[in-house]
Image (cartoon, rainbow, N blue to C red; front, side, top):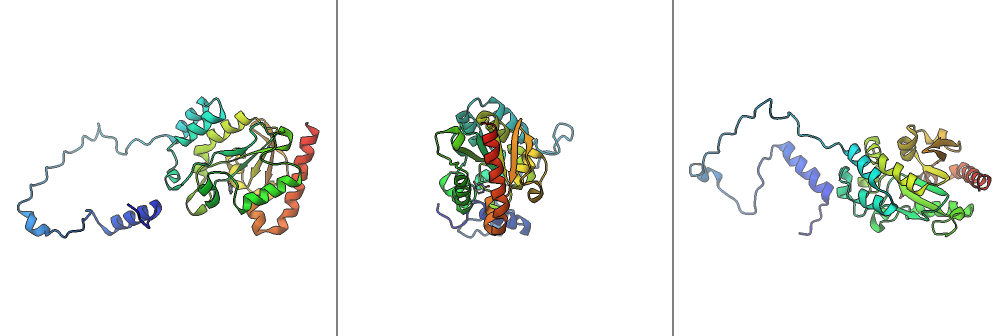
Length: 262
Ligand code: URA
């Protein structure tokens, strides 16, 4: 059935009804329930649950542990993509149109980890294709890097902490990032880049355990056994063009590191 209400709208509407005290779903035809009252069978008495045998709360799945098991079992990028695609530990997956895994040269010396797909990425199923992504491509081109170049020294590989778009493009929560972290770490290990660029606070929080990108940017650090450069997110640069100057300095740092370690 076609509906103007999407999954989040329908969920919010249901929650609102429950809040109002609605307990029955009604059909299109009115039913006189007073007339039915005498003829309807008495509901069976509910069995009183045994307080010892019945857990107070339903058992919750440990999504972080499941992510770790799936990630560790993935021995190739294809296997990792399938393991992530089949993972149901994040509710926001249900509101996303597409699974956005990664793009670029898997042999690249530089790997970029962003935050999560936005509306454009969700629509086409590729990372960083909207305005921020186009700016990122121009920034990379300025130091001779691109997604598609066959030479590992001149290409990049791009992914995000979350492969699904958060509703209304909100920032991923630390819990969501923590649940997906085993996948991100496995992704980095499989690509094995020399340099990791963390775009914005979400990947810094997940992989470095700290945020404050405006303080952290431009300073090399180590994580996942490799050199890491935190940078401001291109979406921030679109909103704050004056910050492009510092981003340019960070790009030159990356270029120098690649030359130094070639
Ligand atoms: N912002 C991100 O962090 N990632 C994308 O893929 C697009 C926008």
